[in-house]
Amino acid sequence: MVAAGAFALAACATGWRQPTSVRISTDNDAYLFWLPPWERTDHEYTAGARGTAEYAGPSGVLPLARWRRPCREPAACMRHSFSLGQELYTGEPPPTPGVAPAAHPSHRTNAAWLYVEAAERDSIAGDAREVSVRVGVVGPPALGEPMQQFFHVIGPKYPLPVDWNRQLPFEPGFVATVARRRVLVSAGEPGASGTPGGAALTARGSASLGTILTGASGGLTALGVFPLAGASQSGRWPRVSVSADATAYGVLRDEFLDGTFFRSSPRLAKRAIYGEGALSLGLWWSEVRLGYRVARTGARYDLQGAPFNWGTLTAEWRPPR
Image (cartoon, rainbow, N blue to C red; front, side, top):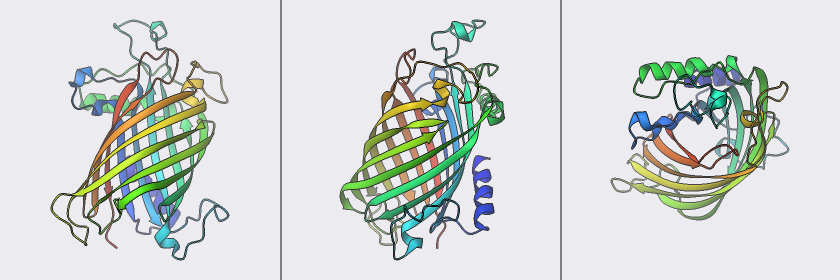
């Protein structure tokens, strides 16, 4: 559903041009597959979904002419994309039925964020820069309760969803982000099609400004790509990717902890700095890429008892040119 909406959004903006890639990703703390379903958490950042259609060349939406670097072939070194996404945040459920949420130590208010995004990226000689803008809504129109209820009905072994009568109120929101990623050391071309594999160490950073999020982050990613069945210049042999990354976040404002920007709502004493580590596995085969990522995010507010774990499933299709 999210992917279809993203593709429709992109089609309207680009006049039904063929995308260079279509990507679907879902986040959930239920993706900790080594745990029995009833032991998997269902709080903090509990779920997310995102559909993205990416196109070659600069966009006609974001005014980045001054920021973009010159490129002989814009279709080769520039990309733009349109996305539709949703994020769900829930407080830790009461320890026993009938206990009011406010009596539980976490005190976190449930929240949903439904948004559309336009992004543009250039990548020249291992140096990638991106600007993105997200616009959307929080509160009941973000459809947090029906989305969570739907998935818990089809997965009855998972814990029952929390009471969405206690959630952030409706308001519009936005966030603009600039990001940069630079390859520090590389062997081969691990991300290029038509090559058997390689390895790279990449540094990355970003800064965001908006009602939803204001802050910055920085980190390192180590990536290795290995062929499963020999090397092929066509790039059609299956390849496996393995990556590890560490990220530090500094946050001035977080809508889901500080409360809504224009209206009064509950807030928590957030932690301005926290960290995150992640491991990822991927399978690349011809035009298809499948991925699994598991992340451990540090405590983000004072009353949060411990770091929390969650996973991401990704599927990407790159149509042949």
